[in-house]
Image (cartoon, rainbow, N blue to C red; front, side):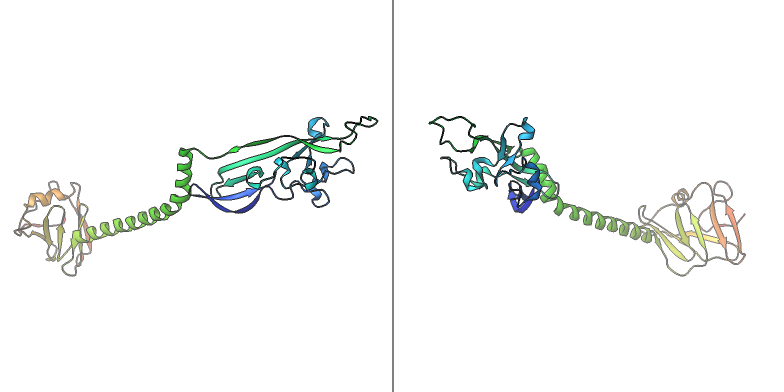
Length: 289
């Protein structure tokens, strides 16, 4: 049975679409050619009925909405007590459009029997009995509401989710940018350039430029690389009341393998080992070896 969208509604705070069978579902064959296959020979049932006798071993059984709702008025004429009501007798579904979950739905159908006069039978009590479609019973099957746990997940996915998703996304983006900015600021503050330099001395993971000051902010130490003097490089420890550390701590900063030093005038690069090749102290000079 096809379903047709009608309008948007709300079920317990959740948006849903109202879907019902199209009006042509039980339409007569001359207005809805798709229903012509339910006709037996040249005889087609009136509007509001669907012949299902081929599915019932050729028994004259017809399907309709309860109380002949939305059917030909002639089907109601022989009976009393039939009161078609859209709210009570229409089939419908409430479907959440974003995730396709039904929130509520009912399928309502009525089984009818076709009653004809028996040929060659003449009984006064039934002689005036007309050919009718006799309603036998009607059925209702569906879900009036969903459980609280399912409702909670659907509400989060359809109401809270669309609002929370962009907020979380933008928060993560801004947080990542702030983290990168903090990293760059800390990296920049770890090397403070006092004046232009010609050469670079790599000490472990720290980088000193000649004629500049290195402030190791996390360990509260300060070192200054002096300008070159010939083929020598002098590295002096500059102490202050706030930043007072021994040269032993400076030596501990250096990697045990080597310190790379380049000299522009000599256009030469050498490896100065830090284990036993030289001793670093105040006012001591070390040369390339």
